[in-house]
Amino acid sequence: MSCQVEQGLDHVADLAGDEGFSLEVPAPLDYAICSRLFDRRCFLTLMALLPLVGEFFRPQGSASVSLRHAMFSRRL
Amino acid sequence: MARNDVFVCELCPKNCRITEGHSGDCRSRIVVDGELRAVTYGRACALHIDPIEKKPLFHFLPGTTILSLAAAGCNLHCKFCQNWAISQSAPEDIQSLDLQPQRVIEAALARKCPSVAYTYTEPVIFYEYMLDTATVAKEKGIRNVTVTAGYINKGPMELLCGVVDASNTDLKAFNESFYRDYCEAGLRPVLDGMVIMKEKGVWLEITNLIVPTLNDDLDTIRKMCRWILTNLGSDTPVHFSRFYPMYKIRNLPPTPVEVLMRARQEALDIGLHHVYVGNVIGTGAENTYCPSDETLLIRRVGYSIMENNLVNGKCPKCGRSIAGVWS
Image 1 (cartoon, rainbow over the protein chains, first blue to last red):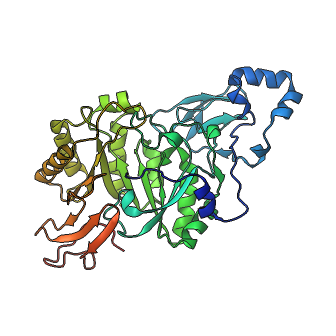
Image 2: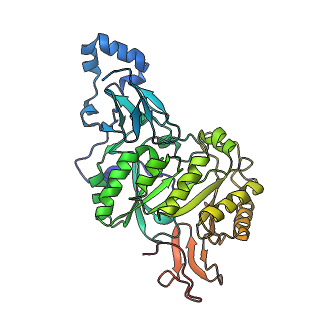
Image 3: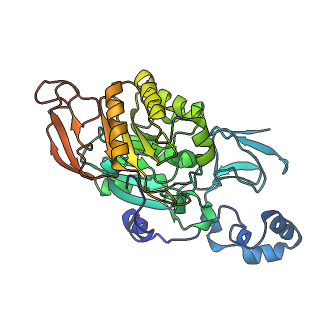
């Protein structure tokens, strides 16, 4: 079918190259994984109250996550 | 900087208002630490080498391969999406690979792909990733292709046209209600975007997926073809694509081939020169013919080129130049 994605992600690693790449669940926010378990607001509150718990939950991959500023945005 | 700031994302016509810790409708633009951020930047969820005919692009470097890149998310929510597993997921819910723009282009060069496609999901919502990758590609002599729904604001589209060489834009239907009810988007910005691409010299082909009973009305298809003829020109290739039951629309049958063929004939009668039928093999409607004398120029079967009779982009019989980017 036109432009239907067909192959699994392993193929990405193969194409991109090579060694040195590892598949990981991205964590666009520090609490990304935890947000599956909690409502985000609830979790942010929990974070504010229990920073140590927050550190415990912090996923390993978060350091490599891009936080590139979005273009075409305006603060109200 | 105040934590309760509200941001407006002006990338697409949804113009989402987003507050700290929340994302826009596309789920990939999130306010983090007081800034709106593109969180899928450098995060590829798909990377494949496809024949360029799969995009589909029939008048742009035919017979070549194209490195095809995607990041998670979409600003449309089409109920018939064929790539819904990656387009309708939040970035944190699917696996992706840390793949920065330079590495994408290195992969394209290593695999001898003359072009890179931003595709599968909606490239508009990984705009920064696409723009930076396309810029590196251009420096290395690699062409850039977007496969997009074209639902983007004017400013970002104009900037993007500076690095994009070709686009297949998905024109879902020619009425606002279809866009609203089945895609959660709108038609007007898509039309405006295509006109901008045309004006900026981007090679444009259009795909129209015909879904039985939802957008197969011939009058509407005629109106769409007339609009294309008037605003984009008779040389703009149009692909009528066959629907298969998918995602949330599994209760409808595949589009009857005769419906696709009739749409194609209407488009040709209206004056469009290059009209194709996609997702069907063996109709002959995948081939390119000379608009002047109907000489067979390119014979295709599926995504394969069986015969290419063009001579320097011209018909070998009458010498007419055929619109497209052939080398």
